[in-house]
Image (cartoon, rainbow, N blue to C red; front, side, top):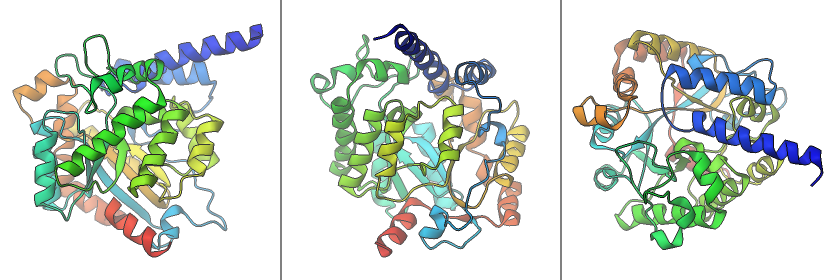
Length: 361
């Protein structure tokens, strides 16, 4: 390797470590957010960050003469088609309680279960009893908390690269990137899908905890292959240039190889993907959500959040407990419900998305 390539490789490794440590540890706090912005600017050389944080407006979609992914599925042209998706079902009973309440009230459209976690079986049992709801697999390759940990669903001997020195899944995405290979990732994701099926539930979709499957192009490929193998729609963004550039500016290592894998995926794609970020108060979180939705362009958009009900156990699990409690209240808020009506957004879920896709293919 020539010196220039060596320096580039070193920078990339340092970038990967620091960015993934801050970006994908699933912690919510001002220091993480500041570090994330500084790293994105310094290491990626971006003069402007167009991110989802604090509800900033989306980059304009280049839709002239081209249908959005939503329109390709038969949704009304020019509309924002939103999936309100609760992450981390099964992580703990507090998450399950908040998510089940939301689903029963029709206030959110979708959730996904972390199969390695302690409360996953209870959530799947509930899903079997409430089969009308959109409940998928939140593919989980990390175990991020300090005192509340979990290991793989697979036999440990089959996935040694996924396991940290303490016997659990790695805390951060960088641990998976540096130690695991694509075969181990494939084995564990498939084991998680099969574990749900063994409990009597056919997952309605699949996505990725802490973005891990987008940490390396080889991981992305097996994730997409499994989605197509099982005919389960996956959380996959449209690999158009402006969206890929935005994800790069946020710290995701979107390489040409990864874009190539995304381009070959043959199931529904998202026009946009957003998350509800931390805020100093519930009122600010709600205001930020309004800004986020108001700035969205037409298309099929998933917005993720992490609801839970307040408890002493939740406070012991994560320092983000307050944010999660607020997110467990947000979509029951009458003001938020009225806002969504006033915005004339159309809500959907992955079951409906896949039904439309099959009707057109």
